[in-house]
Amino acid sequence: MLNLSVLLEDSARKHPTRDAVVFGETRLNYAQVNGAANQVANLLVSRGIKPGDKVALSCPNLPFFPIVYYGILKAGGVVVPLNVLLKGREIAYHLGDSEAKAYFCFQGTADLPMGTEGHAGFEQADGCEHFFMITADPAGASPVEGTETMGAAMSQQSPVFESVLTAETDSAVILYTSGTTGQPKGAELSHSNLVLNALESTRMLGADPAGERHLVTLPLFHSFGSTVQMNAGFSSASTLVLLPRFDAEAAVKLLEAEEITFFAGVPTMYWGLLGALEDSGVDVDKIAANLRIACAGGASLPVEIIKEFKARFKVDIYEGYGLSETSPVATFNQKDRPAKPGSIGYPIWGVDVKLIDADWNTVEGADEVGEIAIRGHNIMKGYYNRADATAEVMKDGWFRSGDLARRDEDGYYYIVDRAKDMIIRGGFNVYPREIEEVLMTHEGVSLAAVLGVPHESHGEEIKAYVIKAPGASLTEDELVAWCKEQMASYKYPRMVEFRDELPMTATGKILKRELA
Image (cartoon, rainbow, N blue to C red; front, side):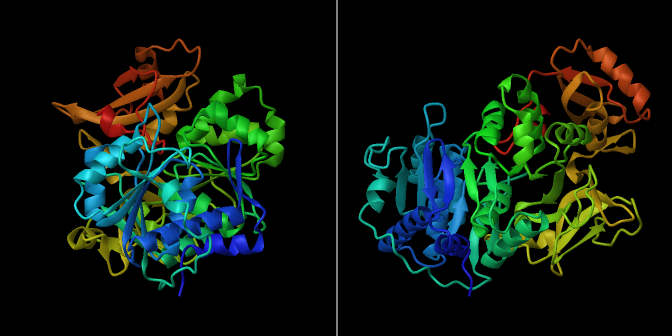
């Protein structure tokens, strides 16, 4: 029997007084987080929540998140983390699709009224029976009249609870995919999926089994943040310093002030950190003296950023790869072998990876391009209540990712692009990732995104959206001419558009569909 909440409970038993979460002036130790999670579990049981029931959670990176997350697990429930940017209609869909019986929602801020949107979604969802508003002041009133606050509901609950025994294959979490095509689908992950992925995340990166100091800027509702930082961090009694919304200047100051040893982020976060150093006033050498581990995922990291980060902070960025459906980690550059910049590494322990064609046939040979397929302890049970959608991506234990990659002679994998992002120009396959890498080597380019746009004769034409480097006087024609010198004639972008910013998801990925 196994319950994911053991990651918290074991650390609370061994290190009760160690800081578990830090947010501003708030510091909660492991005993306090575990006790509060027990109160949440008692609350759910008192309201009739049974093992296997789904409970949704909308909350940014605040101490409330792990308290509610592990409280749900302790009660034998299944956590359904929701993106904090969802609107009422979208929340109603997720609550209905997951068949959630209860919903915890942070009140939000004036700029992000999560509580209002959350309650509107709850009101539209059939079958969701309980709504708990998480308020910044636990003793304060709910911003939505007539709703119950989590603080008030927990106040009479005991901080002691005997966690429900769950089987390793029982569902622990349902993570919703981003829904770039069609309605979002819920990837159903088991307790063993997530426990093994968390423990392997700690081992493969060489994290100190006695604990690290994490700066958590990745959203905890996303699989990367919840597994590689929260679950993995709690498994080793680490301290999680929480930042609810990524702000580069605030992040670099916390790196210094909290003596951070472990940072994980998506490429745009690393880009932001480097850009914020100039005017932040921080002691970069002090940060570098503490920072031991830096890892990246979510999207391909430009090699130029990897080089610059190492030059400033004296640490390698270990890149990896995974999806919500794979718990999420599937491949990674790992401490026991040399890291290769630009590579997503090789399969983690207990996981197999191969490249396939559209008909599931294995693609052989070094540097041949194929779609990544994965099998192992990290693969989801399936999409919740979506047997047909599951059958489309699963075969004989293998999961097909939709991502194109190549494998070198040493067994390291390199993402070429999303299959759906590939541009076909005049019959030639063009991978945006490759073009973006070249653009990032231009001194006048700070960030770039490339995609295909419709074209009468070529089918698609290549267009680059670019943020200039500070002070750069680059023109669109100059950049096109430079690209022409750097790339084959069918590859270089004929169109360039400068932007002050690029649209991004809550997790920091560039939203190419919005650019399109």
